[in-house]
Length: 420
Image (cartoon, rainbow, N blue to C red):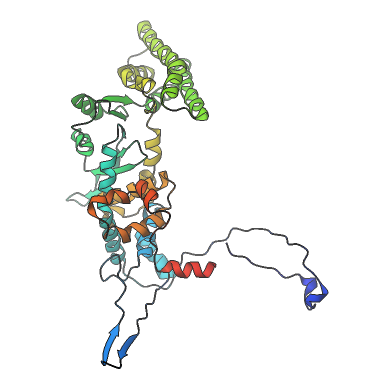
């Protein structure tokens, strides 16, 4: 915050002894500085020792990237602008030029690649943490990544994996094959009570069956089917939607009362289970009547829910399992948002490295961590941190170990001085 003191016209030309300040009135106005860049000039005096006639000089400061002109603050800011605020590198290049800084655009691409490569081990450690979760949520979403021999963009997929400690990793695979689930989770020895929460894509059910996992399914996906049926069967679709709505009102009550563990489970069994029973009993009743077309959207919605009944009931008996994948879908929004804003993204930064950036930045936001402060710290710390303790640099663990006294850029000393 900058303070501007406005003089009183009536006091102009008066001696301070002729008036006194009895109070002050304060108002605020939000302002913005254009994005600015700073050149750090390091001056290292060369000293000649008279006794020995030896020339000595302080060593050049070590950077995050060897022999690079980019300060860690610039690297972190560039990554945050691109992946949090969806500002493509070509626009950042234009902004640099507008601020009088002339660099090549390929240099920005090279810096982004190099910075994200430094973060790969942290991303891998976070993925290992997620894989140990008892409850894992998973989804998939298409992205344009890579080019065919004819030069057209290919469709690949991000497979986000969300762990029970609010960590997420966006894993990129070139397709949507069933085997990608196993490659992502690598949980051949999953605990007996492990739960996989997903939508209705068959790859997840197959994987859960193979490993003997409990497969929980998403009520929101079922709700969407009934919502789509309202145009054809409004009355009956509304019955289903009202029943599902009752389940979510119970969840609101649970959050308001801050229930956890056994209390949460008991509340669901008392209030949600009768609603779930009524929902599936109603579906069976509709199928017995057989008074609608097999091709009706309502038929599809009821069939979808009936086929997944076991998975839709899992949340009733497990307080750690949410009734839907909404928490993952909220975190996943960065991908469709980015696709609209990252012009030429897939030619500048590979999809895998994009997943690295989004995994760490999104997890920072889940844990109320400033992504810029986090990246400035870990980009400096990762090269000197013991490999066996790399998990301490994931956002969740970093907050406990280093957030109170993070590593800063040399720029920070000038920023602090200007605001002191």
